[in-house]
Image 1 (cartoon, rainbow, N blue to C red):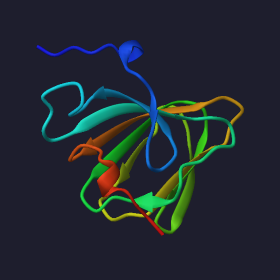
Image 2 (cartoon, helix red, strand yellow; image 1 turned 90 degrees about the horizontal axis):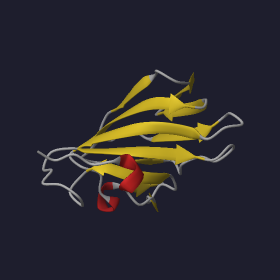
Image 3 (cartoon, one colour; image 1 turned 180 degrees about the vertical axis):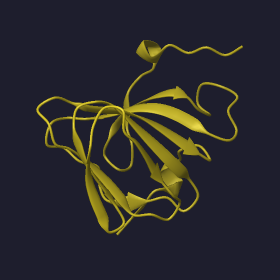
Image 4 (spheres, rainbow, N blue to C red; image 1 turned 45 degrees about the vertical axis):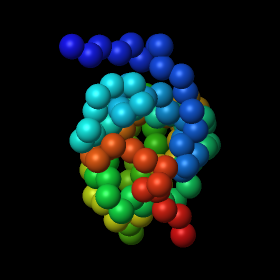
Length: 119
């Protein structure tokens, strides 16, 4: 059985500019098909607009308010919202509140810097 504590995971900055802590992925467990991380953005900060050729992502908002852009649509998101990001979809999320925007990010296949593409 593999059990990881979020508090024990070191944060790092992804290629898109968000700060994440891997909860379970290839770096800390025998994971082959998905990854789960906590991501956060400071007030006013946003990820760089990007897409993934391979990974399907799901964002689940835990805290704060955001503005999610997915291809040609933009929508406000907040705690309890789950966002599906298909492979190949251009996307960006911005913290639109005075507190950090914190969300879970599940990727399948697992997140990889090499699968992150910018305009």
